[in-house]
Amino acid sequence: MTKSTKIQILDVAEALFAEQGFNQTSMRAITSGANVNLASVNYHYGTKKNLIQAVFKRYFDVLMPHIETVLADLPLQTGRAGVVTLLNALVPPMLSLNAIRPNGTATFVLLLGKGYNETQGHLRRFIMGHYGVAVKQLLLEIHRRLPEVQDEDLFWRLHFAMGAFVFSMSSSSALTQIAQSDFNEDVDVVGVIEHLIPFVATGIAGQ
Image (tube, rainbow, N blue to C red; front, side):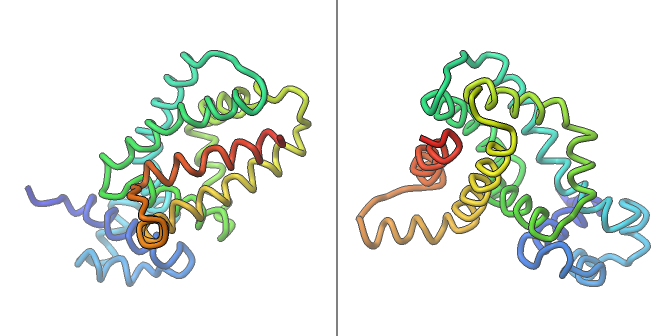
């Protein structure tokens, strides 16, 4: 089935944003890659900001309801062990993004990192405006597992944890090759995440 023009534009924009970043990707590059004119992009998305948000929307529309369901059924356990359990519970929702696009999980995380690094402030407003309930519930669940940690400390720990996650996922292909070459360890993206979770949990819990 031939892709619709709207989806074709979205796919090309996503690939370019992931490769070059949001600021460095021009509308000319998007129209050229999608083989459409600027009027077509404007018709379907209006502005570059809207197009950026649309790229994230198709991932968040799948991810956030899945996360809400997982959190609703998660038993409370405090300390590092509780953080490990929470992070492990988030793995299936994250991996479900691979059904949206090939390598969708890694692409989504990479896009998140670029949005943060390039200070795309409109993205935070978009995410909180559309998915704020799920985001706040996730933060609440982390707080419940670490009740003694102050908000400011948790902010920094989550910031550094996100950095480790973005780096590891964006370089997952290289990491799997190194693991195979140097340690004869056959791992995929799931294996990278399994190695990452104990490290990230220790950082978030501070223990």
